[in-house]
Amino acid sequence: MFQSINFILVLYKRIPSLMFQRKGFCCHLQSEFRLPLPPVPLVLPPPPPSSSFEEVIAEAIIINLRQHRWKDLDCLFPAITDNLACHIFIRFRQSPQLVLYFFQWSNWKKRKKKLLPFCLDTHCVLIHVLMVAKMFIETLNIMKWLMIHGGVAALDLLAALGHLYDDTWCNLAVYDAVVRACTQLRAKDDAYLVIKTLRNKGIMVSIHAWNNYLNCVLMLRREDGDFWKMYKEMLMLGYVANVNTFNLAILALCREFRLFEAFSMFSQMVKVGIEPNIVTINMLVDGCCQKNDISLAFDFIKNSTLILGHKIEPNCVTCNCLINGFCKSGRSALGERVLREYMNEWGVEPNVRTYATLVDGFARKERLMRH
Image (tube, rainbow, N blue to C red; front, top):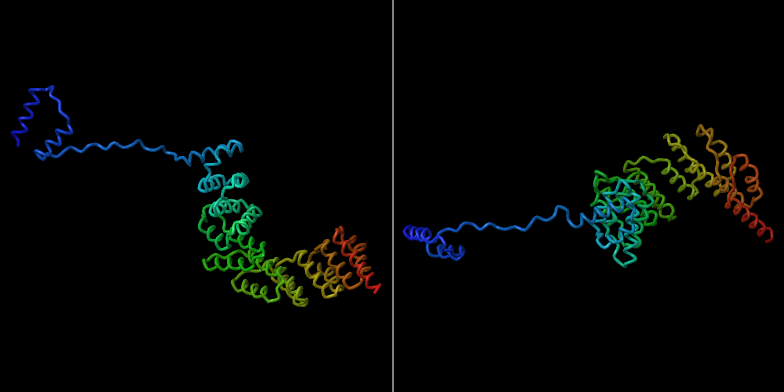
């Protein structure tokens, strides 16, 4: 074998111009002499650019957004995906109004071209951004749109928000907003499911969310005792009632004509150090008028300063309750006296409802006199 190799070397020295193909020659040597071949270096393609196409588009959109060049964004619209929109929302979360404009513009373009709207996750990223910015009305509008027009169930919305929740910049108040959106749609059962699901995951909604839920139950005017059942459940969970909670309880008692218990609730409220507001006063005044005990309503207004230690000025709602109470009891003249004397004394300006109540009261009295 070594002799053969020496022969080849001698031959190459004697005939230096002798050229041979490396591949064929090496293959011949490998098959003939079984010599190992040196590895052929692998030629790799050039590395891809550092920025992907989507990142380039995102930067272009960001530049145009900062300069509010909406016409230039038209050219970039076909490249806007859900992932890209989420990237823009988070990148511009310090400018939430601009984020909302971009979302609305994108939605308008999608509707115009009859394209599908953004997916649920994209909406949820936007909701988180708006909640951190305390843009509550806009947040609730988006949530309600998803439930009504998007066909998204409350628990699905809750799950998507929880999946995308990032405690570095998101806000737990977003869960309260889901409850409020349900209550504004009068979806009482969905609101309770959201509260219960969060509680099972160790997340307690705020007292404000419970107040929204209790108010929804109360506004539905069902006589199944559901309000008091939920009210007791809330207290058993360790929540501390605030002024709005007490107001709801007083309203519920007045609607059930349990006036004595309503005033007891008022006393308890003062005793625990929660200061009643004009809404509290108006509810009790209206409760007295509903039971045709208008003298008690007047006494309560006059003595409220002694009870509370400071004066709460009656407003137009207070006076309208008194006028309505007189008119319903057939004493429209006394209702007019409230308008002419007491409202002037208290410095309250009448509104359209004030006059409408008086007109209706006198008309009702005239009909009764004719009969």
